[in-house]
Length: 161
Image (tube, rainbow, N blue to C red):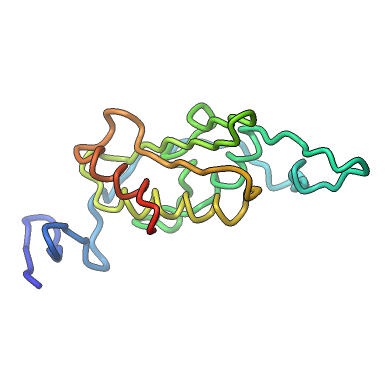
């Protein structure tokens, strides 16, 4: 292990990758966006979970997928959701029922975000555990939004994870 101490925060370098040490924030004052308040609304059961008499599979839509991930917490700012930080939004969730594919693109708050891979893995884990098994789940950085986009997307696409 080799430590690296920057001017604004400290980090740990392991195999060429920097990790933020606990207590340090790479983006201490992120922009927080207003989100719709749905605390008064009843959570609905996803359509795909409802059993049908004729065993026909219900279609899954991007709104349902977004509902599954919008309230996930940001690892650097656990008091904020990924939706509040505009890391995830409905427009970047695609459900292709014909090919049984779910694709979610996320936008890190800064182009050098050191927790982008962790955010992507969190999204992927949540979707893999929550969505019907017949769907393949793909999570990736929105194009052009991170300096290491290709490397992060490669890690997120790794079947061993």
